[in-house]
Amino acid sequence: MRAIILAAGEAVRFNNEVKPLLQINSETIIGRLVRQLKSANVNPIYVVVGHKAEKFLDVPGIVIINYPFYQARDNAQGLKMALDLIGFEDTLMIGESILIHS
Image (cartoon, rainbow, N blue to C red; front, side, top):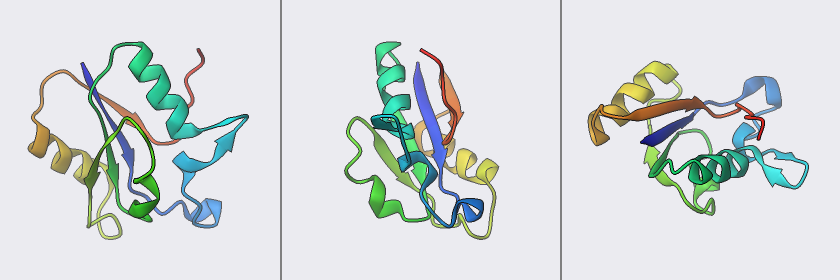
């Protein structure tokens, strides 16, 4: 099983902060997701990025897929682009600001 985290949006309701990189307690949202997915043997973990994509370069344990059309299109198009690149089998899709209780 592998995962795609959709994280290309601009987060206009969050003053253009990068939502997955927001800290909750001692870790970022995306850091928590990656940790939880890896503990469930989900690998690789792809992250579709667009807005402020360079901020994700320091996130360990992910494969970045750049989605250059994030301003003109929606997450569904970003997901399709990613699936066209990596294939359609055994893939879990997660939104960037989902918190999973562990």
